[in-house]
Length: 255
Ligand code: BTN
Image (tube, rainbow, N blue to C red; front, side, top):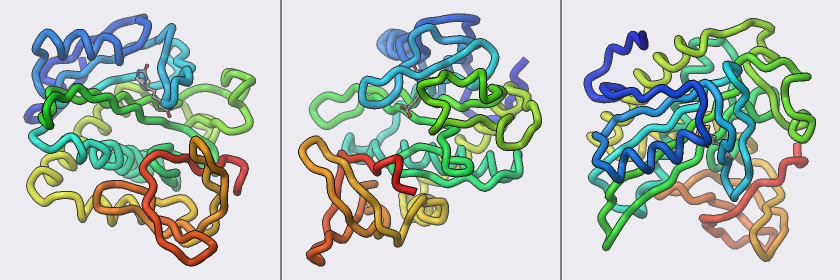
C-alpha cells in the first residue's frame, strides 16, 4: 500500500484511521521496543500536539499526520539537528515535488507564501547522555481549503491546496518524504551536520534580516545571522554582540 523503496525507514508502518496523536502511539511503541524507522500514520488526530503545548488541527484525510521513531547513535545535544534535517527534507520535497518555494522559519516551521504549511515536533527519551529513542512528528497541511482551516489559525496557516490550487495525494507525499528522509539521514550519519546546515540556511526565512525575537522573559530586535553547528539561532543584537539562542521564537507578525 505504501510503496516505499527504502532500506530501513517504514519497514514497520502502523496506520490508524483515527487516534489521539501519533506521538502518543509512537512513545508507546518505542517503549515497547519498536525498531529504528518505525512509522505511525493517522488519517485523523483528535488531540494533535504542536510545539510549546499548543494543539495541532489534524482533520481527517486533509493532511499528513505522522511520527517517525529513531534510535540514533548521537549525543542528546545533537537531537535538534535532526529536527532541522527534517525541515530541510520537507522543504526539498515540497520544492521538487509540488513546485512551490518553501522557506523554513526557525527552528522548523515550513512556510509557503509566508504562512505555515507544516510543523515538526521532536520528543526525546534519553538517560545519562544516551538517547533511548527520538520521535519526530510531522504535520503537513495538504488538502484543506481556506475555510477548512480553523478560524484561529487562518491568518497564519496555509495548505498545499491553497497555494497550488491542486489536490495532492497524501500517500504520494508520504512516500516522497520518507524516501528523502532516509537518504538525508544516512548522509547526516555519515558526513555530519555541515551539509544540512547549509541547506537549512538556503531555505532560511529572514536570514540576514532584522527579526523580532520572543523568549520567555524578553522581546527584542536582532539581525538573524544563521544557525549554529548545534542548531541554535545565531543573532546579532543591536549593541553588536553575537548570541546563540536555543529556546526562542521569531515573531510571526514580523514580515
Ligand atoms: C508545531 O507546533 O509546529 C509542530 C506540529 C507537529 C504536528 C504533528 S502531526 C503528527 C504528530 N502528531 C502530533 O500530535 N503532532 C505531530
